[in-house]
Amino acid sequence: MHTLNQQVLDLVASHGEQNRVNRQVSTESVQALKDCGFYKMLLPKQWGGLEHTPQEFFAEQILLAEADMSTAWISGIIAVHAFQIAIMADEAQQDVYGKDPNTLVSSSYNPVGGKVTITEGGFKLSGRWGWSSGSEHCEWALLGAIVHGEGYRTFLVPRSDYRIEDTWHVMGLQGTGSNDIVIDEPVFVPGYRTHKRSDGYNCVNNQSNPMYSMPWAQTFIRVVNTPAIGALKKALKLFIETRTAAASTDTTKLAADAETQTRVATVKNTIHEIESILFNNFNEMQANNWRPSVDQRILYRYQASIVIDKCIEAIDTLFDVAGGRSVFLGHPLQQIWNDIHIARAHVANSPAAFARNLGSTLLGLDNTDYFI
Image (cartoon, rainbow, N blue to C red; front, side, top):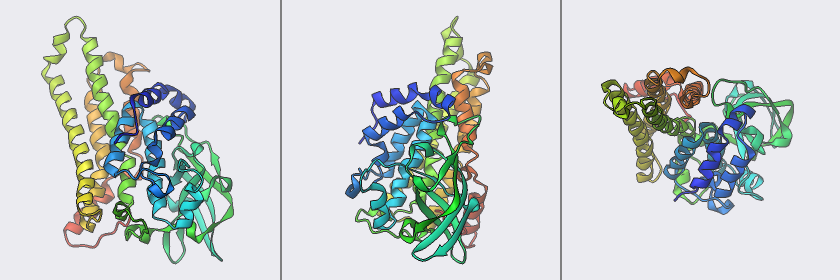
């Protein structure tokens, strides 16, 4: 079941350059995605959502990334928050979605900059959080912080309680507007608008749809690398188009080149491999009534983390032989190259720790990752 149509995808693609210049996805693109229902795909029906499966959601995010990776990046992150909020207290869900199912929520889960004190009925929160993608379009933010003596929690905070500081001057994914969230003076966050990491790990929820028994982190770890799959699909298409056009004196010359054939085949196979693993993981979870084992969760976490590395290798494979014109600013492959490489900076796309956890558990040690 699709939410996106060609008209929306064409609109998103047409705003790609504007997004990069403005360092924000356009309001027109965000509104079009609201109108078609993309942001409601993972929201429970009781709040006006669509309750689509993750497979359906990620298929749409890939399509969106073929139009513009920055738009797919922020929209995937924003939309997946509906899943986390759906497993929080009913009061939190009511606060966010009670009046409008298209209420948008950004996030920054890095707890380093947050300061928390426990108070009656909840917490006092202040600090600075970076990389809050699409935050200018959102009315709430999910912010990570450490509670002394307890551990990690996510805090759901309304726009009136924080400010957004423009810090996003980057070489790729410029349109994501991943600016800083700042709370200068401590604000009160009621206990019901927080989410304990242990509850997320233990899949605590009160939804009737068993899909919400799935570890919510399994959805989040995919929204920050799945856009690269769509971008890589677009890159392969562009490479074939631009290189064929470059060989205009003999259009069969390029097609007969053994090195080009090998590179195109390699990239096509990479796309098929990472896309197949993505959907297979969620198909396995669904077949198990959305309750994967811890061992499966650890494996899925690692497999998600290596998507960007595989996409980087693939886009480099194409760009290395993209021809002399590829060095000029404005070449269509350049932006995709930059976007995919910059996605590697997200902690979820750095596989070393996840590889160690997978290897150590296979060798009999205990799991050390609770964001799975």
